Length: 281
Image 1: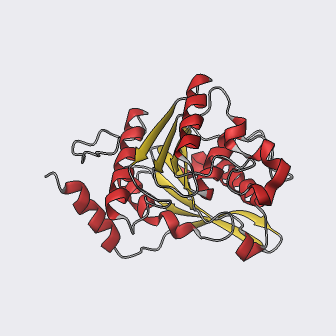
Image 2 (image 1 turned 180 degrees about the horizontal axis):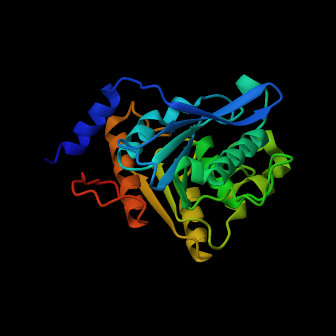
């Protein structure tokens, strides 16, 4: 029985890709952006489900929404409606990190605005992401600027919880991406915009991450807690940037398990009777 969780992950990896619903949530000039939807098995349209929106990593330069496919498959099996979000990147669209953030906010607003039709509980929307995608998730909660022109700002883009995989949280001098945003970091960097009553946050980081210093993550969590914004920091010994991806099966499992436990504590997921124990806590 103790191997049940690992067995479930094997099933997820080996499962054939199924046709998923694609929702067009934004169009800029000729660029159409989509949300790829993964629903729970035996989806019941008479119910409202918590939602989880994933933003891929890639330094706002490249990447695509398939980055978090396996995590979306897992959490949809656990009872969430999961969305894999597009956003504009430098390689594909010739854009800056600012456009990426505008798109992330648009995705959040789309899900909340259409919560009724999507059978989503608008009070239980989780933003998740890794690396630069982790920045985007955190920034939807903390950054007030960089909204798409003409968008209805009365629809909140702020998630109700955050699950962050080695997120880029410091864009200041010496932080990641500063050379691309320069003095705009004051309005763009999550670390420089921490505020009271931010969504409950899970921040997962490897201690050997070459891009995100452990000291930065610890400071972030400390300041969040100090201002009254719950932040759980989990460190994974000797793990590099991207340790949570499927090419690192042990830590892919550990981070999924820890994220699952975090969402159980928030009552977003039912209690899972069988869980593996993580030594990296």
